[in-house]
Length: 243
Image 1: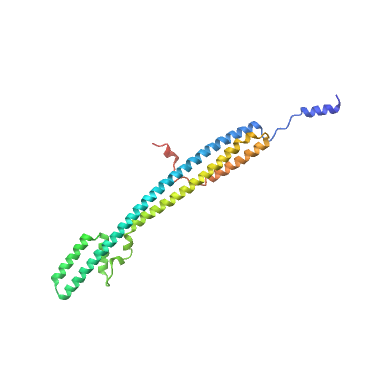
Image 2: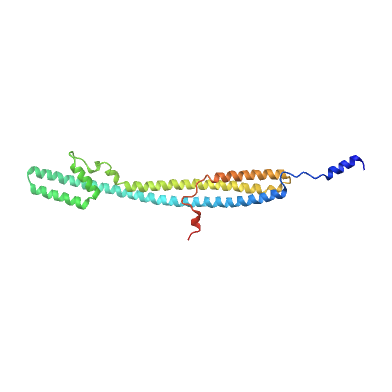
């Protein structure tokens, strides 16, 4: 055998260098990350559905609170009209009492004042009667509704209920946005599953590894992004296992 043939035989028998990662290790990594991605996809889908449920609940509560607030507003308006009519009646009786006093008819004055007291007792709420007394104590002729904050007090419950409806609506809108964002995360996870699933069609290990790395990078980015999204209001995983 010539020297050249011996050199060629030696080269052919020389052990081949191992690649950066073996096929067996790559397949094991793919299987692990497929499992992780599947679990995270299920988690994102579940949390997104909880946001959707909260959105529907908050929208319903908002509509109910809005209807109740409008009803309270109408009741408050009717109360204002009724109390204004009562005040007008008191004002008329006070004018009659003034005329009777000018005539010196004390009996008529006492009778009219008794009527005013009866009206205040039977037709005035505690708050309105206090406002009436405030108006009567002023040196100038004023209306009880000129008392600071009194007119607004009629609508306090309605305003609070309407504000509650607005808060619930905004919370529902946030749930809708967060639910849509979780859906986006689910789409990215689906893309990761696709990339990890097609790794096997590539024969070249470096190509397989490149596709695998792209999928892992997307997985990590989507997971980091998912943890920046708020959880559903009142969410507690322990509540799902309680009685």
